[in-house]
Amino acid sequence: MLREVWPFVDGKRQAGQSVVLARLVARDGPGSRPLGATMAIAADGTWRGSVSGGCVEATVVETARSVLRGAAPHILPVSLGDHLLPWEDRPACAATLEVLIAPGPPAPVHRAITEALAEDRPVTVRIGRRPPYRWSVTPMTGGDVADDGFVEQLPSRRRLLLVGATDLAAVLAEMAHRLEWAVVVVDPRPDHVAAGAMPPTAHVARAWPDSWLAEHPLGPHDAVVTLSHDPRIDDRAIRAALGGDAGHVAALGSRATHAQRTRRLSGQPGLHRLVGPAGLDLGGASLAEAALSILAEIVAAQNRRSGRRLRESGLPIRATATADPRLTPAGPVGGDDAVLTS
Image (cartoon, rainbow, N blue to C red):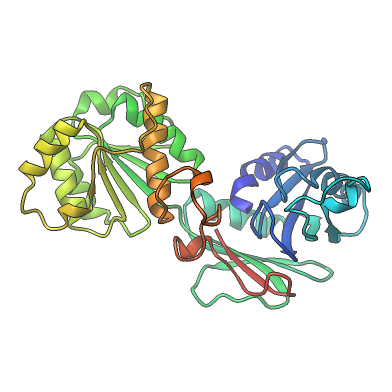
């Protein structure tokens, strides 16, 4: 996806280097990466991203470097099966991939994408599927369709509200940023806010959580986790969050603490939606393990999954449109047109 590699693309452009993008625009069977998977290959030989999870990247990089040297951009059909010896079994991911290999967008389009991502504005990016493979960018709307091109819709990031500027919140904020969440940490206590423990990627606000939520309502793709261990703070956040549209509301604490919490909040509308104790049963004890547990539960809930082991589930490994419509490839997988939201 463009968002995954864009920091690399933008950094190389700022350094004056050319970058070629390789984008998975179609395939004729199963694969380990979704449509829209993107690699960025820079003139200095470095690269980021993948289109197949490791199967055909060497071929893609070699072709991209030829485009950097002046070869014409084109759609490259590539399959892992082409690299197998006669006696080797064909793997399950041996579909033929169509990878569009073309220079990164021109300066106006590049700047528009960079600004939209920096400001968390939704945007639609299109590249033609036929020469001269023109790029364009428009504000994102629900009616965007492909017209002989490949379209990727980059929505605003989901928001994760962490209540309490604690050490666990700092680790959660850092991990959630890697998962492309827009993280906000809210705490009314001046010393906690001023401690400087939060990563620079998180927005930290000194405020009561219910007041913050009244001014910044969350949507069904957003999540709230209370971490302060202070009922005067956490309970206000929970009441406000359950009264809104946040898709996931969770509270840190032991089972005994959560039982006390639910007794205090008895009668609160939507109390059945409150998740506590927050997290999946990973058995970890460190801050990083606790953060992993909490974020894993959020991801599972957003994708309407149980969080059980993959080997115990018969569902597809990647969630489909029923979980989060913003992550859904639409249109014919092997056709000329494709629309991707990510």
